[in-house]
Image 1 (cartoon, rainbow over the protein chains, first blue to last red):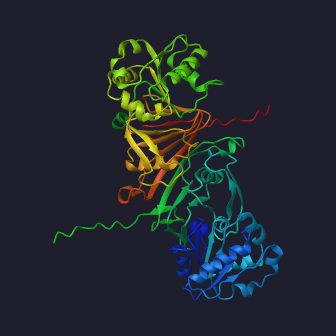
Image 2: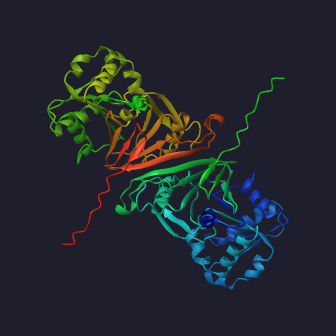
Image 3: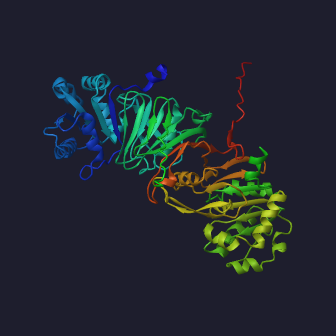
Length: 284
Length: 284
């Protein structure tokens, strides 16, 4: 247990969002983010680096958090790696209780942020405190040690169905995929897990999130479903033997579809049975 | 074992094709059909009833089998249930070694053929002899006791994602889905299996087939993959508790992706490990 616990340990809280979370109406996920961060008084930092239009993404989330009662959300203003290297890391993160990475292109996010003092400092405070780190879409994909860069939607699982790259490593040995059911990404996630079944695959639908704590608890929150692809029981895996565009066989993949309110232990790799309250009818 | 053997037993051979099998070039699946039927001398019966244009479907397959060397393929000429009731069942099936059900609409196929003497006779000869019964697309869907009538592609698994109906019953307690990866049907097959996890779900890609014998052996043959959805290890299943268009949680679904040449035991529900020949290099 302690060995496996060492695998995915993250420290504080992660809120990993499948993209397209509601920003204007019910806003359950953004409200949850603020709730975990400690309410509207909490200092919030927006990281819009993944976006093609980071100023626009920053404005959207600044306004969204203001509408929810946060007085002055902070923003990492950066369009280049140099901007991030030059950023006032201590000032940006001083007293911050919630960090929010927007969508866009995970390759941009990671290639600009990876290996910087800012990324290191975020990792360190997420591990040693209860600061919540959230990411949506590209910001979600980039969370882990291995991330999906791109892949074919709705195609056969085949050796080249997915391209992987090292992510920011806030979460270890888990591969996150987003816009999951909407874009038909089951094949590419199965392919990604088949590369190395040590990784757990987690596909998150739009307007849906998982909340992870450091003890292994993953809770599903939001409108859609979360699909867990667990390769630890794979008995036959042919991926190394086929050519790049060839499909491959894989046997013994387990998967779970979890909706709002359900939980999974990502360390023990087990769905947590909901407490089955057996309601007796009132026979009064 | 004898109890579980009783579940899916079929007798002879079934060749269940995921649709769009190659009819003009390599023609591996049609050749395989003839091979199992006993070669080009074998009497072949084409059942084009599922098709919107049964005469056209009959012509396509008549020509395809002629091109492969079958002198005079027989055809069930019928556009109504009355035609089938009036058909010369003994004459059509006398000496037949292979029966081929074309694609089209499985509801039409079953509503015209189900419960007729012809269907009963086909079931009886498939069970008591080595006659091969093949079906492609709608002809594949209709094979089992429960068939998929329609369903939403690529959507969330939700309670109404699939509509089921009783099939022709040549195969028991297995739900066949076709054009599987091409049309993103994993969600609807998981939904179908969740209705009653006693059923095994088998999704077959285009130009791909499974060959089933009466002893539980399922072999994959063709270009694409076969996806097996096994619900027998499901630990949590919420499908009964949600509203029609609501998604549901289900935990512990096992699935296997099998390519050409791989096998599965559909009675024991276990992928058959390919014999791992460990080839030693010639160190001469």
